[in-house]
Image 1 (cartoon, rainbow, N blue to C red):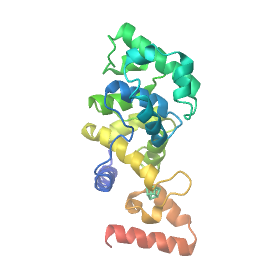
Image 2 (cartoon, helix red, strand yellow):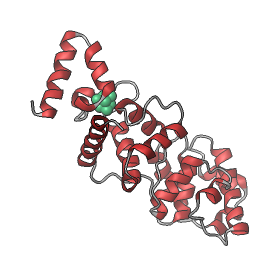
Image 3 (cartoon, helix red, strand yellow):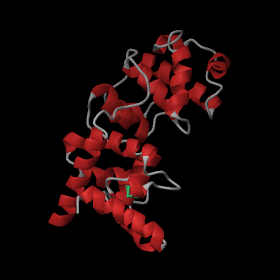
Image 4 (cartoon, rainbow, N blue to C red):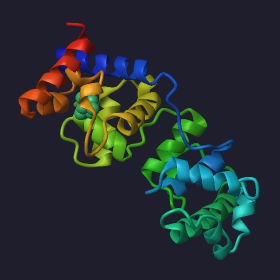
Length: 235
Ligand code: SF4
């Protein structure tokens, strides 16, 4: 690997670590099963909305036994504010039944077994492995995909799986889980999809995409971005 590239990546990760020292999963949960349910609910929804729903849901139902016994319509009514609530209700109930039938009601700490459960794909499995079991994994959502590509932590990755594989190659394993949270936090707070706030971003001097924006900006905008980059590098 190019030493300069490796050094740049290390500086990016160090900066993200300084920016988001307390970054962690923003879904509320107390058990691996609650996290699995919350993560299934979170697809195409916000963590905030999921937390509002689970704050009401989990005091009533929070075990595979509870959910396996629910009629679909009951769970649909409970989670109606969340997008795709019908298919999510079906998946959660069927996933709970499968846990009882095949895993003694326990969430397996194993990717292959997790991905066989209804409603559980690679991203959900990674979230559960990393946040419930402390197993290093990088779940690639829309923020991680966008920010990792912009920062050049991955090179022209076209799919979430390609992004995940490149990130796993380019980031030390002990930082995988934290890096996932750093990238999500950065995508939510500064590196927005439509209008990234490059002028306020401490990573501007290290970011290929930010530099491209700097070079193509109007002279006035470029001057303000350049000042921001100078402030961040101390030059
Ligand atoms: S400089 Fe801009 S594009 Fe690069 S990480 Fe920061 S906000 Fe995102």
